[in-house]
Image (cartoon, rainbow, N blue to C red; front, side, top):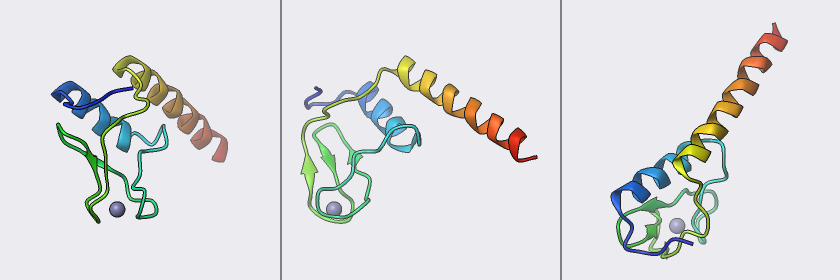
Length: 83
Ligand SMILES: [Zn+2]
C-alpha cells in the first residue's frame, strides 16, 4: 500500500495505470465511473470533493509494461481473426 506524500515516479505510474486500459482504474466513491486524479497529497475526483489518501495496489512499471504488451498481442490477434 502506498501512502502520501506521493513522489513524481508514483504519480507518473499512477497516471499511466489509470489510462492503461489494462487494469480497472481507481474511481470516485461518489461519482459513478469517474477516474481519480492524483497529486502529491492524495487521489481526488475532479467532479466532486472526494479524496482518497491510500493507493491499495499499484503494479511496478515493469508489470504494467508487460501487461500492456499482453493486451496488445491479444488486440493484434483479434484484428487478424476479424479479417
Ligand atoms: Zn466524484
